[in-house]
Image (cartoon, rainbow, N blue to C red; front, side):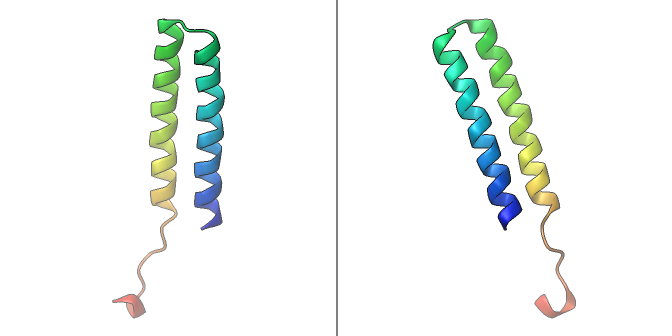
Length: 61
């Protein structure tokens, strides 16, 4: 559970820092690069959260 919270917290911190950059340097090309970066990082976070799921055991069925 803690690894999921840390992954989401890390993504939120990265997104906040990149959005501050876009806020102070409002260029469309920079915004595009940051949007792609956030999308790829979001996909990576989702995939890593899914891969850490606990496998179902015989008792859970």
